[in-house]
Image 1 (spheres, rainbow, N blue to C red):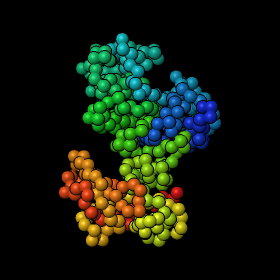
Image 2 (cartoon, rainbow, N blue to C red):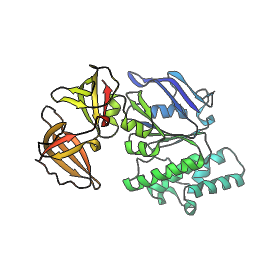
Image 3 (spheres, rainbow, N blue to C red):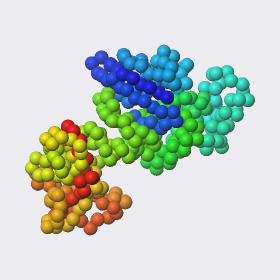
Image 4 (cartoon, helix red, strand yellow):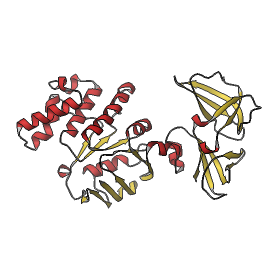
Length: 345
């Protein structure tokens, strides 16, 4: 549905976007994920019509999008700050865009009532924004964005103003609404959990470039670049050269992993903490041996940090529930070859 081809944008000496190309499908929930300053919001502003690229093309349903002014695009942007009108009621905020289009009053009333019911705010229609909670204001902003039935809805860090519990609830709500209204959503976020839980596919950005585009599970289990391996979720990264059974790591020997890289290729081996098996004592058959430096309990999961001779950074292992292992214990670490992913450096 949306085709972005070779889009670049510079601000003086800073390259915000460098030859970015993406395809976004009809009805898809698509996330742009990356650290602050990586160019994802610049791309969102180009799609909305608030920025113009220095080069490249963007088409929506095969038609040029860049040639249309912002107010003529079938695109809506939901701002990070929500940008609600404080002097208007909830219903008036939602109706504003329809009234500007000079639609019949009966149709405006009908569409506002319908969308307020969808977001669960029918009883709040007469209230003003300052009388609502953060989650309710977010729903008003969302209702105002979808009431005009855009082909494409852009969301800039939509949940960043909410506390953790409300954010988790709104993630479910956003996903449900997106399926219900059938609009294509493009969300910008630096929150990996948010992107993984919401999106059908994720584009990971770094320094103005797209590093990888994939479904959440594929992105997590099979990163294709060192940046993605280090940015998406926690990972233990070992440096060395590819060999037939995994990675020949400096000072650590041969570590098990799977790849199709030619032998001798400089590579990183990525092993997720939850894939590591911890055995007490130094006599186990572990791939690595070391000493527990720290144990942190996070409710359902314990993180065990292990200092390994020959490696500067500790190795992180995750175990379900509380663990009997304590700091100072000697342990061995092992993992299956299929759980280690080699990424070319």
